[in-house]
Length: 218
Image 1 (cartoon, rainbow, N blue to C red):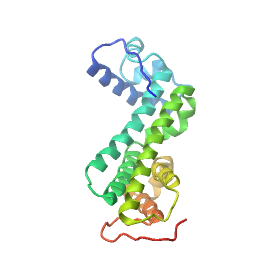
Image 2: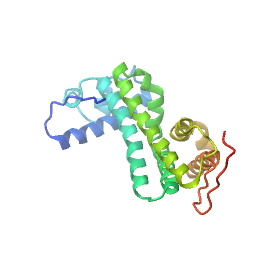
Image 3: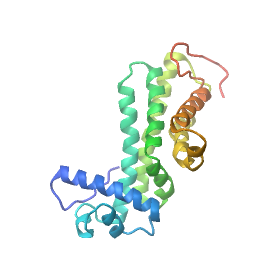
Image 4: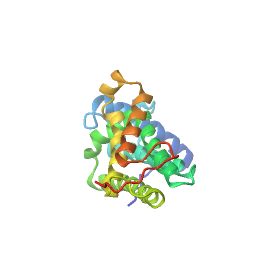
């Protein structure tokens, strides 16, 4: 499924740059006021654009919300792809892809909070597209788990789809619970703890030297 957002401007680089500015502004405005209260005028002001100029790049506030959600999901996908490309073994691909998602969620806390708070505000077809994109991220982790199983034996959680959902969702705690975690732990400590927690649950060691293989599957 694809979603085309019509622009009145033909210069692709300019469209990309302006939409990046609009996305950043929208994240600030939506987090401050909420999607339903915020207006395109508020977003334009935050982006240092006129409202009429903003409408050269998007057609509605729904367009803006879709762009924000799409932006975050693409950050996940790119981070995972880059992490996988740096490794030629199943263990490294799995661990580093997981670490990459944790770091993205940590670095983009506002966007993560916005995604989980405002996805319901997307129009039905837009929501399907975003959820489909998230499902592709889950697919990637399921594939990484399959690769790990082939090389090192089964993880402790036998249902790979459940495990893949955990790997793609649990890291969001670094953003969704930042109101508490930021008081009690440094960001790096939280990131390391989430990685260790998930790897322990899978029976996967962060150190690739010795990989446990177990038949005690959940």
